[in-house]
Amino acid sequence: MSPTPLKPFKIAKDEAGQLRLTVRETRYNSQGYPWVTERLLDESFANAAAARAYATEHYGAEAGQFSAK
Image (cartoon, rainbow, N blue to C red):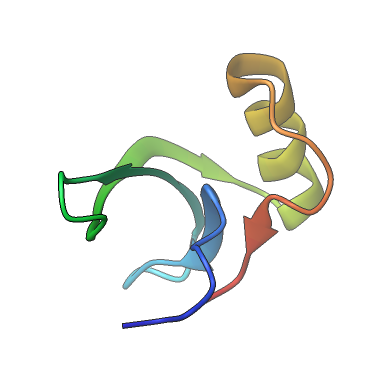
């Protein structure tokens, strides 16, 4: 388990080589154990900047909330 929380947005290439955005939600159970849910969006993007702009517009993402892992 990672000691630092996961960033809520992941930008990565899929099997076809297209950039995709994954939205992560982290919740904690009663013992403080993190449960992370990931949802891969259907949209593909031409570049990482377009994916960031989409996340900012639709999910209110801010700088520093993106990862590439």
